[in-house]
Structures are given as structure tokens and as C-alpha cells.
Image (cartoon, rainbow, N blue to C red; front, side, top):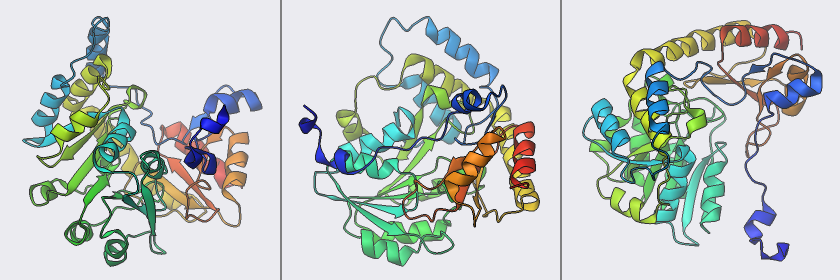
Length: 352
């Protein structure tokens, strides 16, 4: 019966996950592993978020609020009078926006190398995926991007970009918005670590969506909460196309409470800023400039998987960048973790 599987999935692999710390611990007989592969916040969720989540557990015999009012109210209290949509992680938001707007055969343009799920989600909707390579320094050339994406239904740009870490300047984003005919989905999963504020663009452009996540700065990766700032016209259609009850009651309550705990977020932002500098200064391999909570490192003449395996043998899990299409096979991505994890990484990689 495998003949029933769609041909697009037979031709391309799915999302490539980083090695699991638990698997490496078992393989090498270790009890403590530095987990620096998945861009997670190593700090547990805030006490306020934990308390809200525990209270919400008492209600899970009922379906959650389909309007996600608790979270919507918290988002407006935090950011002001914007329009929002929510989903199961940033992935869920991306998938639903593509489902809402893209007919089979229509074009989705993606600036690469970048997060692979954009192409997987577009492919799943039957879209024609067009990739626009970044420049040698991994910046996005607005003229090149607009020329390739002018007639695309959706153009996807990640800023700060995963896995390269660099952010796209606001004037470049604005030039893209003014040059394309369709929607720009600007993935801001790591924007809290950048110091860049793209929100003023929402007041000027009705073809912009800013995607965000609670997984990084707010320590809620395991609860899978994504949201986006959208133009006024989009939410009613998004709701019509969306899967019912995607945001569960526990995640909703925890996310709303986490938005109010600014001290929790600020601690990790400070940790990221400090360790990006230390990685740059102390690692013997070239560390690319980063506006995210990770850095990308050029480990040539080593190959990506080779370096990941050597680090794993020493108790450090990082991400190989080999699976990022368009990226040469000598880069690794390293998240900012706890002090002991970061220190172990620096110590080990400088011996390799």
C-alpha cells in the first residue's frame, strides 16, 4: 500500500533532527551531556508560567477556548493593538498560513540556506518551491530576492536566520515588501536576541506577517506555542483554514503568564549576549556574527558530521549543518546553554 504515499515525500526527506542527548549518553556511557543542538533556553520555565500551567491542567477534560482569548489578551497587553494568530509552534503558524493562501502549483519563494520546514510545508500544500540563495556573507540581496519572488504567493525570510544567525536590516526588509506582489512571512523566532524591532513595519505594510515563538526566550519549547503579528485582513481566513483547537489549555495558560515575566526572558538574553562574545573570542575556529541564541562555526577542514561526532564523544551535543540545503558541509550550529555546557564546549572544540 505504500504506492498511496504522495510522490513529493518519496523524492525528498523529512525534517532532519539533531542527535538526542539521551541517545548519546547511552552510546558513550555518560550521565551528563551538554545540550547545545536545538536552540533551547536551558533555564526552566518561569514560576508564573508553571503555576498557570498547573492550574490549567484541572480543565483539560474540556476542549480549550477556540478563540485563544487568554493568550490573545496577553499578547495585546504586551505588544499593543496588533492582530495575531496562534499555532502549535512556529511550524504550525507557517503551515496554516500556507494552507490559507497557497493553491497547488502556486509559488512559495524561500531565502536559503534556512530552516527546512518552510519548504516541507509548502511542498505539502502542492506549491512550487523556489529558493533564492543568500550572498557569500549570508545576507539577503533584496534585488535578487525580489526578482525571483516578485510573483510568489508567499516569500519566506528568516531573520535572524537559522542556522547562519545573521539578521536582515529593516531597510532591506522594507525594500522586499515594496517589491513583491505577495505576502512576506518574516520568521522572527530569534528576534528577541537581536535588538531589532520590525514591528513598526506592521503599521505600513499589509503584506507582512511576523512569526514568533514561545520556545526560545520564554523556555516553552516543550509546550509548542507559536504566534504571529498579521495584517487586519488575514485572521478570519486563517481561522477558517486552521485545524480546530490547536492550542491546548495548558500551553495557552503558560504562554500568557510567561509573557508577563520579563525578568525571566531578560536573564537568558543577557546570557546569550555574554556567551556569543565569549564563543567569538575563545573558540579557535571562525565564529560567524550572530543575532540569535546560537552561533554558526566554520570547522573546516573538518566536515560537519565529523565534528559533531567528535564533540559527542566528549559529552557535547551540537547541530550539524549538513542538512541545510545550500550550505557547505563544514559548519556546525551551537546554542547558548548553561555556563558549564558552554565552557565544556569551548574546552573540547579547542582540542579538535
